[in-house]
Length: 191
Ligand code: ADP
Image 1: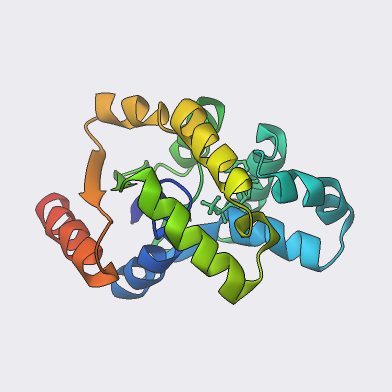
Image 2: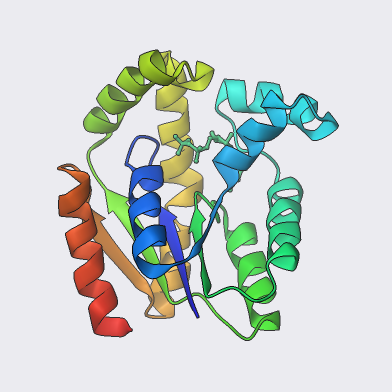
């Protein structure tokens, strides 16, 4: 069983890389962003609670996202492995995930950080906003806000995985294939 985390700024291609890795390595894909957007779309009580947080580009509180991941892991007791896309995003979430996976005796194997300049993130996101009609992707100031949160709150969790020797950064400024090739080379070394 292998467990992989994909992290990176908004627009870095987490979802795109996740889809390729999940298919190649037969993993179960958990995207907290997709789960939250689904709640909003279904207009559930949780969706109503988080709609304006997503709209503003703020992080949803740790308890909510940790709760969602806890339920998903309970629902998938015997899987080959998990790919966490956009989770954890805070130190509290990283520690909670360690604990959840420890209980399954199957720790995180690798955290992959997608690296690219902010300028390219902004260009990609604004393009995606028009194509996918995502309301948090249509204004540059909202994207800049998410990037700031990424740099101040999420990026520091790199140290958590670096200390455990489970971290790689890959260049995500080119094509999805170029990004995946770097990831595959690393996975071949560790698996
Ligand atoms: P992006 O990386 O472009 O911001 P995501 O789909 O990963 O896209 O996340 C969209 C939004 O969902 C975030 O801006 C945030 O509001 C919320 N979100 C997703 N994952 C988390 C998380 N792990 N913790 C807190 N909020 C989250």
